[in-house]
Image: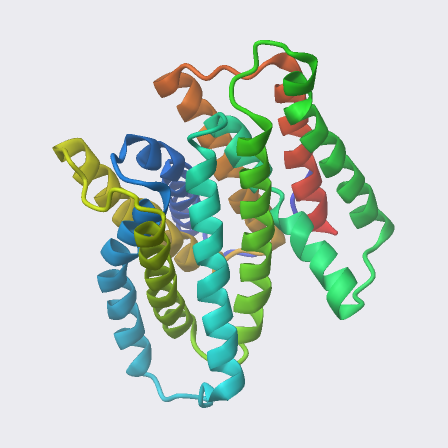
Length: 299
């Protein structure tokens, strides 16, 4: 599949921005690995992820304030930001919890269904009817998801459970709601402000969830602390920051790469670090999901 041409001024800046984009997407792809290495509960891991990312997001917001504001946030903007923080909190908790019940590959690939959820949400809630290409992508994504969970119905040696896959799917739909909420919030506020406030709300949600579920909050080892620090600084702040920086120079082709690359990184990392080799059927299902995401981004 050929990507649309990207106008650039020179080859060097184009290469630098592409490497920046790839690096940011790679950092995000390791988030599941960091969660696995953290010796805290899934909601607690989400809390620490937000806490360690907040200083970076605060600095980003402070830099935005140096520019004259174009419009006030307003009540509608604050509601959208709050909804973004809540839905992202649900996404983080469900995704982190799924890693204890299914493979990292399945969690990441099923979590990559978020763009499909965005299309469905826009269709069902906003009346934005998708094109035939998008409808084909939806069917392809459904088939891919079915192939991922099929070995668990046939009793093959696939690891994990349907419960874990269900949590990952729920995380994808929550992230789709987050994307829709952020799109509404960005109409009222700058990106840094949206990220900072929504992350604060997400941190509060994860803290309440962790305490309510009786999870272990404090990492009990150096590895645990390094994992949650990396989750916040590397995956959340640095990964998202590099992608935000580089996407200013790219269009839909690069956006498609951002959607699929972290999932591929997660699959390869799980194979190399945890020995989680997908079955041929699951691998084919993963390819189908990634292809569907590319079709959605192009369509």
